[in-house]
Length: 166
Image 1 (cartoon, rainbow, N blue to C red):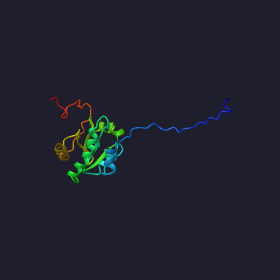
Image 2 (image 1 turned 60 degrees about the horizontal axis):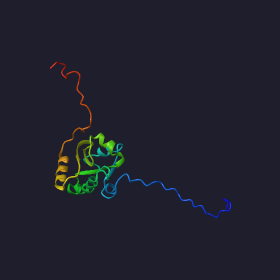
Image 3 (image 1 turned 60 degrees about the vertical axis):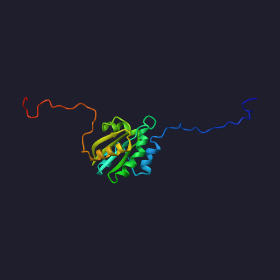
Image 4 (image 1 turned 45 degrees about the horizontal axis):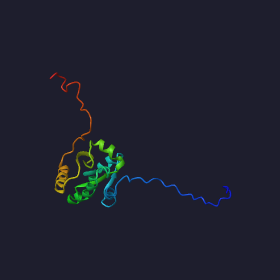
């Protein structure tokens, strides 16, 4: 039998793109879709934070490597309900967390970043028992603004401020 007389039908199957893991877990996305949180990134966080008042930003981390980030995503709306009107919530998408966390000196996932009137206040890393989480959140909301603990070498003037020797 030759190729020309062959009655075999050739079936062409569509090529499917490989499946990828979603950038953001459903529990984290739910904060935006259902709970009124706002997506923030390096380009929008300053304007969002400058809208005034206390702002809490969730860095949930990779859901597989840091499963407690999913717990924080579930507890965060409960904290907001327990402290009504005290803070707005921002969420950083997974692929942007690393760079934005570095900007604010955060090195642990999950982390809640506290901002006030566009300025850094503190971070609250990890998952906690409810009473501790509520107490630590209240303390963060009462804390003064401060300088982010970014990595770096402190600058020291080569000349004394008063121009004298000692």
